[in-house]
Length: 419
Image (cartoon, rainbow, N blue to C red; front, side, top):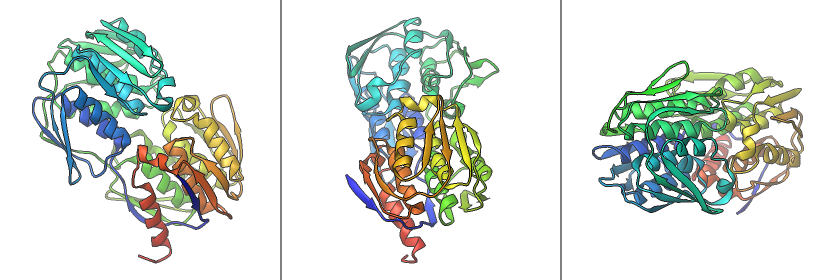
């Protein structure tokens, strides 16, 4: 889908969508629990659907009605299932060890760039603990055997999803287990979100200075009802729009959330934007924006909207610690640089990040590369351009934010006083 985005400011109030990161984790816990669970989740998305579809293939039952999932857990996991992961890295990487712990054998089907994204060192660690993993074809992964608990060692600087998968899987082994990191953990907030989820479903897991400890136990106990909180990763695009356009307020965000992308507030404050918080809402207002130095190791998903703010700020911004972005839905270092450059920005790719010299965006043609965050970045960029943007692949937003274009129009109408 190709859209033409006019150069106009946006502003007003918007409600945050449900966090897909938290939804993945709560869905998995609910599907493995002892009785049904209601998950209040105001929206779903392609990635959430992928996880629900995979869990249903294993024997769970999902229904979605009036903004809530009802999850009936798998009584007897189905063996030799095919799990269609779509393009969702979370679905694949988190469910792979879960399937191993269930001991049922399954084939994971991968789409898009997901087949290219790394599974090492999780692959080697699982094979050292009772599983056999193979690649029957370029777009499939086969898991057989049964995962055991005990002592695990794994690197923390490749993907926090590997850690999340183990935290979700090991309570199923019936063994006391511990996970020790051999390298520092990056994107730590996602592992914290997983720890929060398993505790919510009765698993007494603990974090210590070297990793995590899970006492001997036999699975998950339903909490009956759980609510998915607002998504900071997607809200960041609107908050960044508030920094470069007109004030934007996002409601429905937890200021004490374990989501690492809550850091967008401190990042925007460092740029010079004005931040106001109250209750469950955040308002960002433009300020005298200037370049900053930003370590993105723990907030890689914030790089696209933050890079846009940098392109609109005075001076130079250096983003580093972001080499893992090359392994996302697109090579995000390249796609961020190409998109902003096509719109008139001065962007240089470094070994582990981006160097952005702020100035004035003009407009032009941008391609999402089938990456939802690139599509959203280009959309927000229109409010800082002098000419229209032609955006190719605008439908990519459906991966995480199906109603993005509706909310985008809502903020345009609010700014123009139509509402």
